[in-house]
Length: 297
Image (cartoon, rainbow, N blue to C red; front, side, top):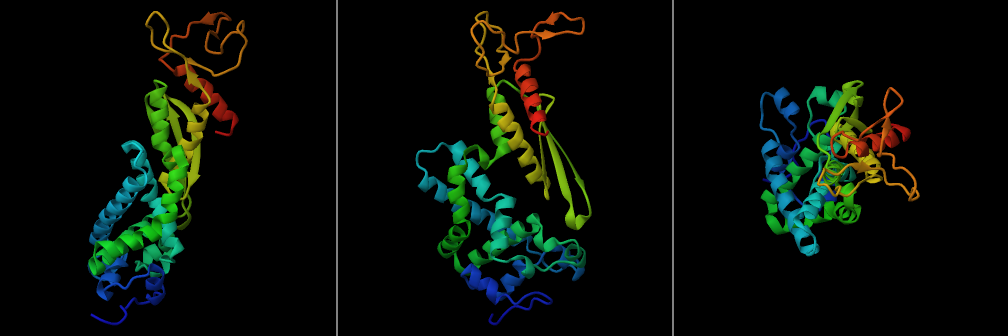
């Protein structure tokens, strides 16, 4: 098969292939660029979803091996976070925009009208399909070199981000270390389909701890988790009492030896005091939630 594939109404693919640094079988290239919305309107022709499936696996193997070799001292959990950050929808969409992939994607009229060529989900899925097509055209080693060139900057950032690799996972781990359970995300979208904005709120043990906003539900939740993580990080859970009772959350303060901690007692409605008999760590959540509210939650 020779020549350039026909991509009606879209930019010629030569510039895209040059940015990728690879020749791709023309029929595979068209298939990799065919979104299901276009395939449906064209009478049910094949879509890029099988190539996406393949490319996702190839991408995962390449990134996993690179992380394994480059970070011999990191535990599995940290490697998994770095991989997740590198192959996330948001990260792959950034890579796709960097090579100008959007204008080449074959979309149906509805997706085109709603800005589908710049949606994170469509960009990331199509990039994975392109990787699958490169793999079928050239095999593993040439594909590995191309993948590492594309995601190399993301891998480098992932090594420095720490908790920021995945704020939702980091929040879950931090909450668990404080003896807190029950993280809940609530999200809703607003606006037209082509400019939809999602607002997310995260609750820890029933308390609102953070909010976030983004063009995708996942990114809004990550932003909310980041806010909650920083709020919760400023508070500590005290050591278990000597009588074996569960630990009670304490606000991390520098009060004098004669001072009274914020979690020691709280006024009740009758002006007296009530014992800290809530669930373990509940005072931590309440205090951190107040701090988050002051920060704009």
